[in-house]
Amino acid sequence: MRQRRFLPHISHLSAFEAVLRSGSTAAAARELNLTQSTVSRLIQTLEQQLGRPLFDRYRQRLVPTEAAQAYGRDISRALDLIQRSSMEFSANPGGGTLTLAILPAFGTRWLAPRLGDFLKDHPGINVSLATRLKRFNFAAEGFDAAIHFGAADWRDADHLELFEERLTACISPALLRDKPVNDAGDVLDLPLLQLETRTKAWAIWFEAQGIKPKNVTGMLFDQFATMTQAAIAGLGVALLPDYLARDEIQQGRLLSLLKPSVTGSGTYWLAWPQSRANYPPLVSFRNWLEKLVAVSPWSMEAGSDR
Image (cartoon, rainbow, N blue to C red; front, side, top):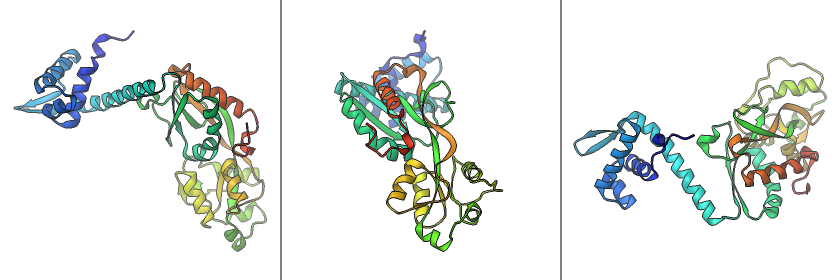
């Protein structure tokens, strides 16, 4: 059960957030269309409810305490979430909005080409996508779900397994002409491009080729997109998920090396906070994804898996 003492009225929170952001009760009063004395009274009531001051008072100035600044950041996010949810409900009361955090490469190259089918089958649902490279606090960020890579280990979340990552070593035609590759030992002599979140990927790939390399070193990237462009430019060999490698190979920008499609170091998941498990847009999206990945997802052409 929620404690009413720690659930201040939204008018009190709005006044506090406006003063904190604008720097004065006068500016907050203009923004909220209230009198300055009303804003001051709302702030005082909030302080009484919380049992501690939010501002130090110097003559006519209010200076927020350090604790109040941290509190204000959370309140600002909460007010933004309430406003967004209210706007979405008003605009689309029969459907809803699914806010989804995506990994950049997976979102643009695997999910986006297929998302039109979901939206066509669910016309009342809006989908809002935002990129996140690392896991986050669902409660703080306000997402309904996220695409997660690794294991089913997101705290306080449920998971739907999509598919395990499979990797292909890709090289530019120009680099391969200069540095022919006959076996995995030849690959060791080439610059090996690495992703920050897949530091063991090359070791796994070499073991699948039948050799155990020593330390693998090379340029380090934080996203597949930049690593792919570096490989196309001939800066080294990149290990790419099959859904990325396929398009580059088909269009002749990259070539695959030796044994392709090696099982990688993790799995793609849809993760969602347990508190949102029954949210209708999420349920629809989850069911759609589950059917979609029932076929071999890494070999599917975008748009052909209907």
